Amino acid sequence: MKADASNEERLIADVDAFEFITHDVTTIVHSMEEWLARLSAHLQSNRRTWRGLKEQSELARKADAINTLVNQSMVGWTEQWQSYEPARAFADSFDDKVLLLVFGKFNAGKSSFCNLLASRFAAHGKDVRYFYLDGGQIVETPERFQAGVTEMTSRLQGVRLAGKLVLVDTPGLHSVTPENAGLTQRFTDSADGVLWLTSSTSPGQVQELDELGRELHKNKPLLPVVTRSDVYEEDEVDGEIRKILRNKTQENRTEQEDDVNIRAADKLSQMGVAAELLKPPVSISTYFAGAHGQTHAAMNEAGFERLFAALIAVTEPTLAYKRRKQAEVLLHHLAENVIGALNSKVVSLRIVGGIYG
Ligand SMILES: Nc1nc2c(ncn2[C@@H]2O[C@H](COP(=O)(O)OP(=O)(O)OP(=O)(O)O)[C@@H](O)[C@H]2O)c(=O)[nH]1
Ligand SMILES: [Mg+2]
Image (cartoon, rainbow, N blue to C red; front, side, top):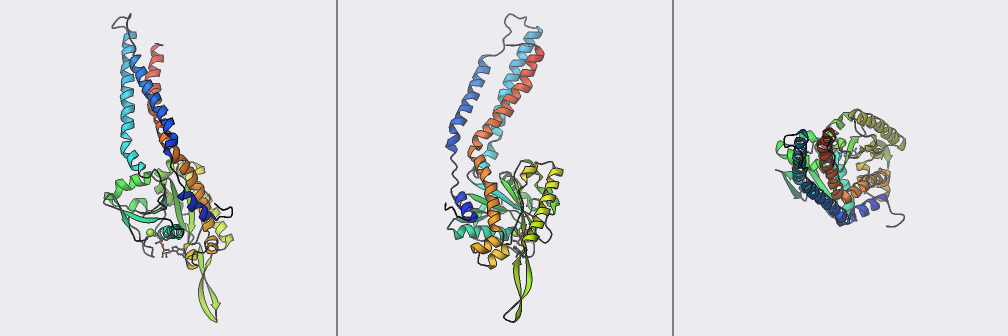
């Protein structure tokens, strides 16, 4: 990458270079699996015995109770691991992709925004594929997203950029059809972050974030994007009065971004989610960038260079996590379900019962 590369080039190169080298963690995963196998074998071969104790004595009963609890715990954690399987299989199909939910009220400019990002990837020769959900299936389509003044998007749809970054264009999480609900939920569960699009005509309607409670409680980063950050002004061109589209001034943009930041921070705190999930808001004008042929200068003036920097900042930690995810998930299982079960059920009983060794 050239030292003077734009953020757009950097983001596209980053996405294109996503290498999900899961074999990096294979050794670690393997050693954790071996540890669990050794623990299970050890627990089996070291069952409490009550030899030398009276069969009906208090200590003999405690020894039996411990054996039963150990068995139940082992069955329990094996079942818990198996119960993750369907969600794991679905998530696996997105394991080598970063999924960003593009969320916001109708007319916020979500579909137009996704289309613009897609056309930037296409301009750099990257593969761009649109799809939508139908009857629980992902269907590919050559059509770009429709954008318009009336409420346009009623289905869950997405676009895959360079095969590795997926923008999910939501119709608002409440408006999905019941038959799509399950798949939609799994889809949104797999999302790695949320772009909250809020129009500069009345930015920061934070009650919209109520719908994102589930995602935010799962510690997904939230990047507010102030859209439609432009105005039409009348200007004289060749003796004629014309309407000219201009970006909102930097001062106006900064004011709106600061305001959205304060409101969103306040809302997240009310919702009881971590303050650091909130990323600094960025203002953009998709119209301005499009009206000026998406040149580098126009994209920059329209706010997209800052947006691309923010996207790099959101996607990089996501990728780092995905690379070690397999190990993280197993480690979490060992800590919560294996050690957790032994500690809460068995160890406490041993101490209460006073049997050591
Ligand atoms: N002024 C201005 N208008 C925009 C911009 N981006 C989108 N619009 C307009 O805003 C309206 C809504 O755009 P969409 O992209 O359809 O918005 P959406 O959020 O996908 O809307 P729904 O699918 O109905 O939820 C359309 O009339 C767009 O032409 C922009 O950057 N500036
Ligand atoms: Mg739309």
